[in-house]
Amino acid sequence: MTDVNLATIRELLTQCSPEEQETLFRELRQRHIIHEFERIIGAPAEMILEAVHRAPELTRRMLRGVIADAAFRTFVVPAVAPQGWRDVTPEGNFAFDYMMEDAQGQVSVQVKLQRSERGAPVVKDGARFGFAGEVFMTETQKTRTGNDGEGEKTRPYRYGEFDVLAVSMQPSTGKWDRYMYTLGRFLLPGKGENEMATLQPVAMTPNEFWTDDFATVAAWFRAEDGGKRMAMAAAVKRARRKKGAGGEAPELF
Image (spheres, rainbow, N blue to C red):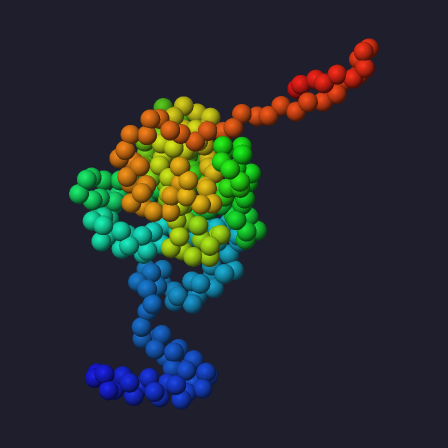
């Protein structure tokens, strides 16, 4: 088809009513799929989206996590390609989602979604995490719970399983191409030996632990950091008054 014919068709479409355009669209949809997944699951995209729309919140939350992963491939991978990065993720199940490589070597990336509740991003006081102001949160744990050959829980991530944590900031920005990055070795420790804590603070703006630039976090990974780590702030004890023979005196608890 020539450009002239396409231009003519476009002009005719502008003259169609919304109802006529809808009819044409439905006829074209019967001949053309939007995505290969329609063939795999045996249902049209409209039916799949309707099922997602009607699904409970937990299912939709899981889907948003999957979208955050896919968005990294859609937006970040091509954005860093001019800097020499390429996606070399191997087939199979790993603790990381992506393996990125440039001339200096490989960096593994785990993608997570910023935590939200009732459709709003979770915000916490950053002081308890040693951060100024407020922080967002993310949940870092594996999707499935299991045990390894020695009976240890496999759901928490362990240090060394991925190099970089990329957190999708879509809940607070409304955009799937926005990420904050930190190093796996920077993350707060969990209860078990070598385990990462499930909940991690995410800085609202770049700081010494978080950046919005992939090249920056890759440079951090390759640099000596002197053992710099996030840490929970020491609990502050409150004073209360206790009556005694000599009047009231403060008591710490």
